[in-house]
Image (tube, rainbow, N blue to C red):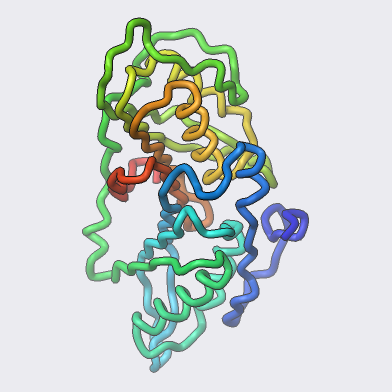
Length: 274
């Protein structure tokens, strides 16, 4: 479906009744084709959506609230445009359901149909909200490097291995990731974790590359896939995981990760800016 028809960037009335047709799917294929990503995919992964404004009514009309964690497999043919997801979730606010299981079953069925593959959903009820703690992405930060930067659109030529680099296994992080919504132009702020095994990547070059997304317009998922492909092409690690944690907008945050097959999934760690 064309982004011109998406609710993002347009004034849209908030629904007062359940409506699964509000979900607006977007094909992954076009952006992947531009990056030279073919099937079978060169990575595994998920898009983790954390939802902070979930509500519905129980059978007696009493409001229920929960936090939600959606997982969308990276091999799904489609993603869901974020504003349409928000509108859809809000359409359930006045819907009576017998219990949380019924809510999960309905939402999973609708979102799975939209993206073209089964998705996961876990709810955290209000009596467990204390479990929703803030953490820090594990790894060594790149942000303290004192370097000059003058490129603010993605430039894979910035990436390189360190001179006389040996084989290492390490995890590096940065909170300086910024890209921009391709529809509204609004800034998308985030942190990124890069775990790899292979020749040591030049850290100053990697930080410059991360910052080069600063004026780039692309969805979160595609930014992560671009990073994965660029690092693989430039440094050829034997194992690689690129994981971004983007800040919340409209009650949702999006956290994609892409990894070479066989790598463990990263932890779903809510960071301070989320």
